[in-house]
Length: 562
Image 1 (cartoon, helix red, strand yellow):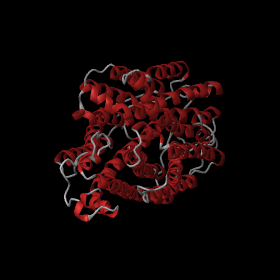
Image 2 (tube, rainbow, N blue to C red):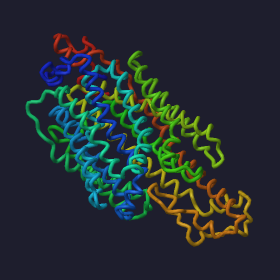
Image 3 (cartoon, rainbow, N blue to C red):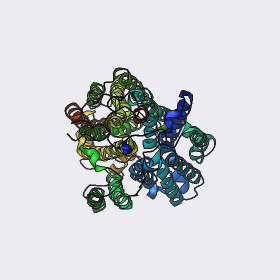
Image 4 (cartoon, rainbow, N blue to C red):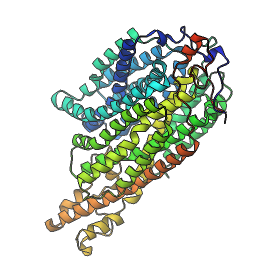
């Protein structure tokens, strides 16, 4: 059985605990604009800081702590996602969203004032504590303001926000750093955040589920943090180390143990941070697995394509970000278009499965990438992959929110965000592992010989000065081709050509991992995802009319138990 009628007052929002019913259309769109601004903050921070981070690290003299500037933000923003989602169900969206934005702005201001690397790492962690609220609560607010049948038209904008942030971020970061200082890449968040904060404070009602006996799951918060934190740190370490390193597998194993304890704690908690019973809902569970695998797949493309443009084509760090424009255009068009299509047709399964199929095809095409691949061909492949990614931004949120009760909408939305972020992190880590395994000196040797160098002139072992680790980290600033300058002039161009081909082959081989993950997500969505008719009214409207939820178009009040 896929749904149950509402039979408990706690499952039925009313005008008292769902004041969104009293908002007019203009107020809803003002809130929507503020929510998108808040989301833009988090997305922009990820794209504006990256290109200028080498300069920041150089000035603060902290190259040995480089990765922690990124890792701390990832850890704090990820582990707080389900906590914010659940608390927003209990205490309301507005206070939690405002707390998140305020923390993010405080972290931004302090990061801009940093004078040492340790200060920057600490303040980036504070930024992450705030960022963890922005995405899941923003999506939950849209779920509060609009019915599932309407949401597609607006949630498609979330994918567009990320696309715009990817376009604006690198150029804006470079401009601010070149004309002012790197401190302004953090200060730029302040005016945007203050505007969003003001509108949310003025207009957003405090939407929450009706709860009279709120109990905070402190044990769940602690065990979830102790589970996710070492796993994320271990995965980050694995990007620049080997999986055999005890620091990698040891931290990940510790995290898995604590996650096991977390599941045990949650199964007995009165108000669990992650309601385990939601996973008995087939549609909810299938969505979590599919989004995990989909982000697992396309994450590698986002990281490796800029590296390809920088190392093989010689683009600057800023310019390489704009080389992703075809991918982002496909993502934006598909995100908005798929949301509108779901709103108009009420059908989502064919759109999701179709998008995942297109993603698989796009990633498969990019596995044919070579050093001499024409840009126009690569642009086409990137557009196809981006077009496949788009529906995952808009449609899965609609599916999940339509499949769970109103009182757990925030927690369910946060779970989707959590699976998306962890899937991306794991995908990147394993992609880098495949990349390192494929980019061997044997491959370099063979490609340099194929490019025309005499076999006798190519060393059978890495020459002095060749640093393979410089090729396996997105944070590296070394020059892996330094040894080429020591070769005879007539061989230098051949060596560079062979190196570029080997580097590209290692990237394209890594794309196959994403192809496999995306293909499995297609199977999961096609077989296990059940299409529940989209609700055409909110639970509060059903309660106001005195009609049963099923008659009023209200979907399941409890998770399906099939």
